[in-house]
Image 1 (tube, rainbow, N blue to C red):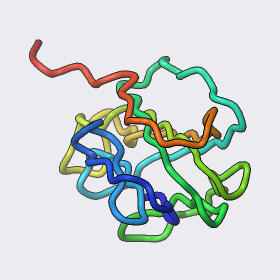
Image 2: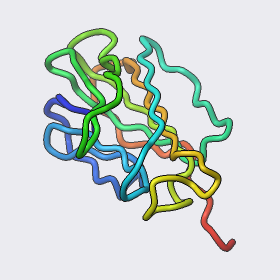
Image 3: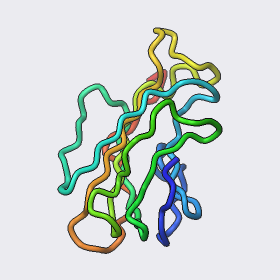
Image 4: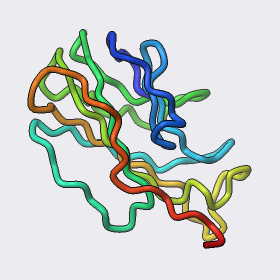
Length: 146
């Protein structure tokens, strides 16, 4: 979950399948019910190219930070270590990009069958302009059985 999101239109997580906004929080859906998720964050002042590498899903949404602090937190527990604020330029409008892999491998367990946790990378960057953009899906997870 990303706390301290300002007044922006809500985005249903079902719209991107990965990330959404409700009230003053943005949520990233990890795909597992309970367990560890490997999360990395990076804040950029310019829009980086999408890292399509091994990521199965990539989605972006617009956020506003009225306080200049956007923090990643866990839903029902504390993080092992505090992650840096994603608001690299203080108060203002940002784009949040979430990369994910392993979300569909073991939805009711804590670990993938390979023993690797679900991985999420959160990248925040200052957009060009100050208006919210629509949610973007840059890569969608392949459907199973096709």
